[in-house]
Length: 319
Image (cartoon, rainbow, N blue to C red; front, side, top):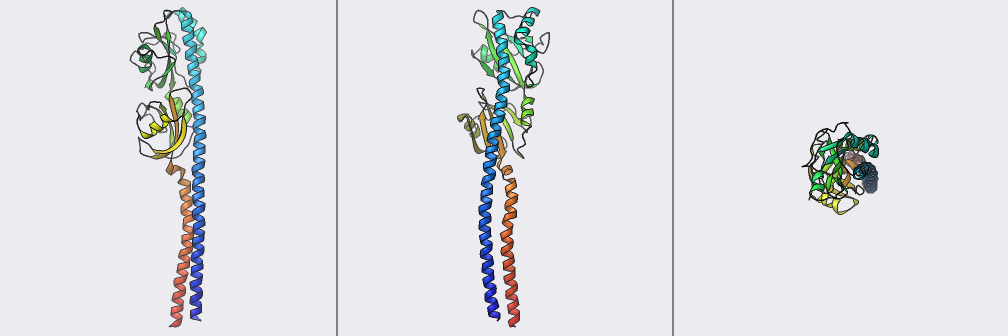
Protein backbone atom coordinates (compact mmCIF):
# COMPACT_ATOMS: atom_id res chain seq x y z
CA UNK A 1 0.00 0.00 0.00
CA UNK A 2 2.84 2.37 0.90
CA UNK A 3 4.45 1.74 -2.50
CA UNK A 4 1.21 2.65 -4.23
CA UNK A 5 0.92 5.82 -2.21
CA UNK A 6 4.53 6.70 -3.01
CA UNK A 7 3.92 6.17 -6.71
CA UNK A 8 0.78 8.26 -6.64
CA UNK A 9 2.54 11.04 -4.75
CA UNK A 10 5.36 11.11 -7.27
CA UNK A 11 2.91 11.27 -10.16
CA UNK A 12 1.01 14.01 -8.44
CA UNK A 13 4.24 15.91 -7.87
CA UNK A 14 5.26 15.68 -11.51
CA UNK A 15 1.79 16.67 -12.64
CA UNK A 16 1.87 19.64 -10.28
CA UNK A 17 5.32 20.63 -11.49
CA UNK A 18 4.32 20.32 -15.14
CA UNK A 19 1.16 22.31 -14.49
CA UNK A 20 3.16 24.98 -12.69
CA UNK A 21 5.67 25.13 -15.54
CA UNK A 22 2.80 25.43 -18.03
CA UNK A 23 1.26 28.25 -16.01
CA UNK A 24 4.71 29.83 -15.81
CA UNK A 25 5.16 29.66 -19.58
CA UNK A 26 1.74 31.23 -20.12
CA UNK A 27 2.60 33.90 -17.55
CA UNK A 28 5.88 34.71 -19.31
CA UNK A 29 4.10 35.02 -22.62
CA UNK A 30 1.37 37.20 -21.12
CA UNK A 31 3.97 39.37 -19.36
CA UNK A 32 5.95 39.79 -22.56
CA UNK A 33 2.77 40.79 -24.40
CA UNK A 34 1.94 43.29 -21.65
CA UNK A 35 5.48 44.67 -21.83
CA UNK A 36 5.21 45.19 -25.57
CA UNK A 37 1.81 46.80 -25.11
CA UNK A 38 3.20 49.20 -22.49
CA UNK A 39 6.04 50.16 -24.82
CA UNK A 40 3.80 50.58 -27.86
CA UNK A 41 1.32 52.70 -25.90
CA UNK A 42 4.06 54.95 -24.47
CA UNK A 43 5.67 55.36 -27.90
CA UNK A 44 2.37 56.28 -29.55
CA UNK A 45 1.32 58.62 -26.74
CA UNK A 46 4.69 60.43 -26.73
CA UNK A 47 4.70 60.75 -30.53
CA UNK A 48 1.23 62.32 -30.42
CA UNK A 49 2.27 64.54 -27.53
CA UNK A 50 5.39 65.91 -29.20
CA UNK A 51 3.34 66.62 -32.34
CA UNK A 52 0.73 68.56 -30.35
CA UNK A 53 3.33 70.57 -28.43
CA UNK A 54 5.30 71.34 -31.60
CA UNK A 55 2.14 72.57 -33.30
CA UNK A 56 1.37 74.86 -30.35
CA UNK A 57 4.91 76.25 -30.36
CA UNK A 58 4.80 76.77 -34.11
CA UNK A 59 1.56 78.75 -33.81
CA UNK A 60 3.03 80.95 -31.07
CA UNK A 61 6.27 81.62 -32.93
CA UNK A 62 4.36 82.33 -36.15
CA UNK A 63 2.30 84.91 -34.27
CA UNK A 64 5.44 86.58 -32.93
CA UNK A 65 7.05 86.57 -36.36
CA UNK A 66 3.99 88.09 -38.00
CA UNK A 67 4.15 90.89 -35.44
CA UNK A 68 7.80 91.52 -36.29
CA UNK A 69 7.04 91.52 -40.03
CA UNK A 70 4.32 94.12 -39.49
CA UNK A 71 6.74 96.35 -37.59
CA UNK A 72 9.43 96.01 -40.27
CA UNK A 73 6.94 96.87 -43.02
CA UNK A 74 5.80 99.88 -41.04
CA UNK A 75 9.34 101.18 -40.62
CA UNK A 76 10.34 100.61 -44.24
CA UNK A 77 7.14 102.18 -45.56
CA UNK A 78 7.74 105.25 -43.35
CA UNK A 79 11.11 105.77 -45.02
CA UNK A 80 12.66 107.05 -41.81
CA UNK A 81 13.63 105.86 -38.36
CA UNK A 82 13.60 108.12 -35.34
CA UNK A 83 12.37 108.14 -31.77
CA UNK A 84 10.17 111.18 -32.34
CA UNK A 85 6.63 111.19 -30.99
CA UNK A 86 5.30 111.38 -34.55
CA UNK A 87 7.26 108.28 -35.52
CA UNK A 88 6.14 106.40 -32.39
CA UNK A 89 2.49 107.25 -33.01
CA UNK A 90 2.70 106.32 -36.66
CA UNK A 91 4.32 103.00 -35.90
CA UNK A 92 1.84 102.21 -33.13
CA UNK A 93 -1.00 102.82 -35.53
CA UNK A 94 0.47 100.75 -38.35
CA UNK A 95 1.89 97.96 -36.25
CA UNK A 96 -0.83 97.72 -33.60
CA UNK A 97 1.64 97.41 -30.75
CA UNK A 98 -1.17 97.07 -28.24
CA UNK A 99 -2.49 93.87 -29.82
CA UNK A 100 1.05 92.49 -30.01
CA UNK A 101 1.51 92.95 -26.28
CA UNK A 102 -1.57 90.87 -25.58
CA UNK A 103 0.12 87.76 -26.94
CA UNK A 104 0.70 85.83 -23.72
CA UNK A 105 4.09 84.40 -24.62
CA UNK A 106 5.58 87.61 -25.95
CA UNK A 107 7.61 90.12 -24.01
CA UNK A 108 8.21 93.60 -25.34
CA UNK A 109 8.73 94.40 -29.01
CA UNK A 110 11.51 96.91 -29.53
CA UNK A 111 13.06 98.65 -32.52
CA UNK A 112 16.83 98.90 -32.46
CA UNK A 113 18.92 101.19 -34.69
CA UNK A 114 22.09 100.34 -36.60
CA UNK A 115 24.22 101.12 -33.54
CA UNK A 116 22.34 98.63 -31.35
CA UNK A 117 20.39 101.18 -29.30
CA UNK A 118 16.70 100.76 -28.46
CA UNK A 119 14.78 103.67 -29.97
CA UNK A 120 11.19 102.38 -29.89
CA UNK A 121 9.68 100.24 -27.15
CA UNK A 122 6.22 98.67 -27.05
CA UNK A 123 6.34 98.52 -23.27
CA UNK A 124 7.06 102.18 -22.60
CA UNK A 125 6.03 105.56 -24.01
CA UNK A 126 9.65 106.62 -23.73
CA UNK A 127 12.02 103.87 -24.90
CA UNK A 128 14.00 102.29 -22.09
CA UNK A 129 17.73 102.56 -22.60
CA UNK A 130 19.61 99.44 -23.67
CA UNK A 131 22.23 98.45 -26.20
CA UNK A 132 22.40 95.01 -27.81
CA UNK A 133 25.21 95.55 -30.29
CA UNK A 134 27.08 92.47 -28.98
CA UNK A 135 24.15 90.06 -29.07
CA UNK A 136 24.10 87.24 -31.65
CA UNK A 137 20.75 88.29 -33.13
CA UNK A 138 22.07 91.81 -33.84
CA UNK A 139 25.41 90.69 -35.25
CA UNK A 140 23.68 88.17 -37.51
CA UNK A 141 22.09 91.05 -39.45
CA UNK A 142 24.77 93.72 -39.15
CA UNK A 143 27.87 91.62 -39.83
CA UNK A 144 26.60 88.56 -41.67
CA UNK A 145 23.72 90.06 -43.64
CA UNK A 146 21.18 87.53 -42.39
CA UNK A 147 17.83 87.54 -44.19
CA UNK A 148 14.48 86.68 -42.66
CA UNK A 149 13.82 85.64 -39.10
CA UNK A 150 16.70 84.96 -36.72
CA UNK A 151 16.24 82.99 -33.49
CA UNK A 152 18.98 83.74 -31.00
CA UNK A 153 20.38 82.04 -27.92
CA UNK A 154 18.22 82.20 -24.78
CA UNK A 155 19.43 85.18 -22.76
CA UNK A 156 18.17 87.59 -20.08
CA UNK A 157 16.58 90.67 -21.62
CA UNK A 158 18.66 93.83 -21.21
CA UNK A 159 15.43 95.76 -20.71
CA UNK A 160 13.49 93.57 -18.28
CA UNK A 161 16.06 91.02 -17.10
CA UNK A 162 13.62 88.19 -17.91
CA UNK A 163 15.11 85.06 -19.47
CA UNK A 164 13.81 84.95 -23.04
CA UNK A 165 14.25 83.43 -26.46
CA UNK A 166 14.94 86.36 -28.82
CA UNK A 167 13.42 86.54 -32.32
CA UNK A 168 14.56 89.30 -34.66
CA UNK A 169 14.09 90.63 -38.18
CA UNK A 170 16.29 93.21 -39.85
CA UNK A 171 15.21 96.22 -41.88
CA UNK A 172 16.96 98.49 -44.34
CA UNK A 173 17.14 102.20 -45.00
CA UNK A 174 15.71 103.70 -48.21
CA UNK A 175 19.30 103.53 -49.53
CA UNK A 176 19.37 99.75 -49.00
CA UNK A 177 21.76 99.83 -46.07
CA UNK A 178 21.37 98.04 -42.75
CA UNK A 179 19.03 100.14 -40.64
CA UNK A 180 18.57 98.04 -37.52
CA UNK A 181 16.38 95.24 -36.24
CA UNK A 182 12.96 94.65 -34.77
CA UNK A 183 13.27 92.42 -31.74
CA UNK A 184 10.65 90.30 -30.00
CA UNK A 185 11.20 87.77 -27.25
CA UNK A 186 9.31 84.74 -25.97
CA UNK A 187 9.62 84.35 -22.22
CA UNK A 188 11.22 81.04 -21.21
CA UNK A 189 8.56 80.76 -18.51
CA UNK A 190 6.03 80.38 -21.32
CA UNK A 191 7.67 77.13 -22.39
CA UNK A 192 7.65 75.87 -18.81
CA UNK A 193 3.98 76.77 -18.47
CA UNK A 194 3.16 74.94 -21.69
CA UNK A 195 5.15 71.84 -20.76
CA UNK A 196 3.78 71.82 -17.19
CA UNK A 197 0.54 70.35 -18.54
CA UNK A 198 2.47 67.13 -19.25
CA UNK A 199 3.18 64.52 -16.55
CA UNK A 200 5.57 61.86 -17.88
CA UNK A 201 6.64 60.46 -14.51
CA UNK A 202 9.97 60.26 -12.75
CA UNK A 203 13.18 61.24 -14.62
CA UNK A 204 11.12 62.28 -17.65
CA UNK A 205 10.31 65.59 -19.29
CA UNK A 206 10.15 67.83 -22.35
CA UNK A 207 13.18 69.52 -23.93
CA UNK A 208 13.51 72.33 -26.45
CA UNK A 209 16.79 72.97 -28.31
CA UNK A 210 18.17 75.31 -30.91
CA UNK A 211 18.98 73.18 -33.95
CA UNK A 212 22.72 73.43 -33.27
CA UNK A 213 22.36 71.94 -29.77
CA UNK A 214 21.83 74.81 -27.31
CA UNK A 215 19.23 74.09 -24.63
CA UNK A 216 16.29 76.52 -24.58
CA UNK A 217 14.08 74.73 -22.06
CA UNK A 218 14.41 71.51 -20.07
CA UNK A 219 11.23 70.89 -18.11
CA UNK A 220 10.81 69.99 -15.24
CA UNK A 221 14.52 70.22 -14.41
CA UNK A 222 14.65 74.00 -14.01
CA UNK A 223 16.71 76.60 -15.85
CA UNK A 224 20.16 75.52 -14.70
CA UNK A 225 20.88 73.86 -18.06
CA UNK A 226 19.51 76.68 -20.24
CA UNK A 227 22.19 77.90 -22.63
CA UNK A 228 24.30 74.74 -22.35
CA UNK A 229 25.14 72.89 -25.54
CA UNK A 230 24.86 69.16 -26.23
CA UNK A 231 26.17 69.56 -29.79
CA UNK A 232 28.01 66.49 -31.03
CA UNK A 233 26.34 64.04 -28.66
CA UNK A 234 24.76 60.91 -30.21
CA UNK A 235 21.24 62.04 -29.29
CA UNK A 236 21.70 65.52 -30.75
CA UNK A 237 23.15 64.14 -33.96
CA UNK A 238 20.08 61.92 -34.30
CA UNK A 239 17.77 64.92 -33.70
CA UNK A 240 19.58 66.92 -36.38
CA UNK A 241 19.65 64.17 -39.00
CA UNK A 242 15.92 63.44 -38.96
CA UNK A 243 12.90 65.76 -39.00
CA UNK A 244 10.99 63.58 -36.55
CA UNK A 245 11.12 60.12 -35.05
CA UNK A 246 11.62 58.00 -31.94
CA UNK A 247 14.56 56.11 -30.46
CA UNK A 248 16.08 54.98 -27.16
CA UNK A 249 19.19 56.77 -25.95
CA UNK A 250 21.14 57.78 -22.87
CA UNK A 251 21.05 61.47 -21.92
CA UNK A 252 24.35 63.37 -22.08
CA UNK A 253 23.51 65.49 -19.02
CA UNK A 254 22.39 62.90 -16.46
CA UNK A 255 23.05 59.50 -18.06
CA UNK A 256 19.44 58.29 -17.74
CA UNK A 257 18.24 55.95 -20.49
CA UNK A 258 15.09 57.33 -22.07
CA UNK A 259 12.71 56.87 -24.95
CA UNK A 260 12.86 60.00 -27.13
CA UNK A 261 10.09 61.17 -29.45
CA UNK A 262 11.20 64.31 -31.28
CA UNK A 263 10.09 66.74 -33.95
CA UNK A 264 11.43 69.90 -35.57
CA UNK A 265 9.22 72.92 -34.89
CA UNK A 266 7.90 73.90 -38.32
CA UNK A 267 10.14 76.34 -40.19
CA UNK A 268 11.91 77.46 -37.02
CA UNK A 269 15.44 76.35 -36.04
CA UNK A 270 14.15 74.53 -32.97
CA UNK A 271 13.90 70.86 -32.02
CA UNK A 272 11.40 69.58 -29.46
CA UNK A 273 11.50 66.21 -27.76
CA UNK A 274 9.50 64.26 -25.21
CA UNK A 275 11.88 62.13 -23.14
CA UNK A 276 10.43 59.41 -20.90
CA UNK A 277 12.66 57.19 -18.79
CA UNK A 278 12.48 53.50 -19.68
CA UNK A 279 12.23 52.65 -16.00
CA UNK A 280 9.16 54.89 -15.74
CA UNK A 281 7.50 53.34 -18.79
CA UNK A 282 7.91 49.84 -17.34
CA UNK A 283 7.27 50.74 -13.70
CA UNK A 284 3.69 49.40 -13.73
CA UNK A 285 4.76 46.36 -15.76
CA UNK A 286 7.51 45.54 -13.26
CA UNK A 287 4.97 45.41 -10.43
CA UNK A 288 2.76 43.09 -12.50
CA UNK A 289 5.74 40.89 -13.39
CA UNK A 290 6.59 40.37 -9.73
CA UNK A 291 3.03 39.39 -8.92
CA UNK A 292 2.58 37.09 -11.89
CA UNK A 293 6.02 35.56 -11.54
CA UNK A 294 5.49 34.63 -7.92
CA UNK A 295 2.31 32.59 -8.55
CA UNK A 296 3.94 29.68 -10.49
CA UNK A 297 6.85 29.73 -8.05
CA UNK A 298 4.48 29.36 -5.12
CA UNK A 299 2.72 26.47 -6.87
CA UNK A 300 6.01 24.65 -7.43
CA UNK A 301 7.04 25.27 -3.83
CA UNK A 302 3.75 23.89 -2.50
CA UNK A 303 4.02 20.81 -4.72
CA UNK A 304 7.55 20.21 -3.49
CA UNK A 305 6.54 20.65 0.14
CA UNK A 306 3.69 18.21 -0.36
CA UNK A 307 6.13 15.72 -1.91
CA UNK A 308 8.48 16.04 1.03
CA UNK A 309 5.61 15.65 3.50
CA UNK A 310 4.24 12.63 1.65
CA UNK A 311 7.66 10.96 1.51
CA UNK A 312 8.20 11.54 5.20
CA UNK A 313 4.77 10.05 5.99
CA UNK A 314 5.47 6.95 3.94
CA UNK A 315 8.84 6.46 5.64
CA UNK A 316 7.21 6.76 9.05
CA UNK A 317 4.55 4.23 8.09
CA UNK A 318 7.15 1.68 6.96
CA UNK A 319 8.97 2.00 10.28
